[in-house]
Length: 425
Image 1 (cartoon, rainbow, N blue to C red):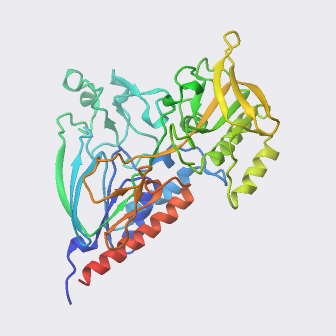
Image 2 (cartoon, helix red, strand yellow):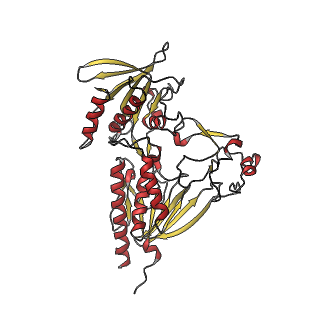
């Protein structure tokens, strides 16, 4: 019986979000080796930062925990966090991959006991909460982080000038001498699941982000509503911590506009409808107002849209927002827009404005030396089995979580097909 080379049974997964995790466990449970390379300190990606999914309004931690259990139990899965793929060369069945591993400064002895954080004198913006609040330089990304161990932000840590975390760690888990290192491996196929990032709302100066603290983005709203967020689930005004009685949601903030993002991100309308339910859960008397260009809730999602508008009392206005300003006396925000259906200019006052910023691809052009093709919007183009490189999730384009999971499963199947084809050569 012919022996199949190890590389021809290995699949590289670039990215450890929900799509990358799904592709890895599907491949591993089919008997193949899956190698996840994630640039962040934990797996789970953007899904881990959500409060709830739509349309069922259930917490994502349930699904993540199931997938983390699958990761732990499935044979043949290797995970590298704080790692980047620098180069991919070769062909299906014979790819050579170069990986750069950045120091975590915390080793596998870490028990996540938390004794290190009280003694750390350095603060950093809380990246998991999109910059809302701070953590210490040594931090646990979140309560269900995988891997469940701390990391040190080398850009703010005092290292040997401080080293208090080393002194208090009774397990010897903190290693400030860790250095970056590079290594190579061989794989037979590649799944690119590099995910997405929110569009930079700072580019939208007419909408007041960065100028008025009570103008936030939709991803920040997810963190405000989450029980493990900066306000422990209370939706409060960032400016003064006051109660929020009214929210204006601004759709297509930077999307469908050739000055910013020319395309529709597809999920933003559903996300704002979902977030309106968060507001009414906390404050049944609060008002939610959505400004939209086109309310896009395709297929079965239309029932969710109707339910939210009727049962949660959400009002909607078809019209693009011209600008957001602040009343100098009351400090309420003023949203100015044109109501297309009534052909009138209107103003709506709100305690909080939430910008529905669009989805941008995380993979930067030239960041990875690999035979990867990007389309005009910088999303990855899947070139088929002959190339041995496949895409999954929002690396390929904007999509919801359910679609990303389906596409990741498909990518894993295609990658296995490419490996089997290479083995027959």
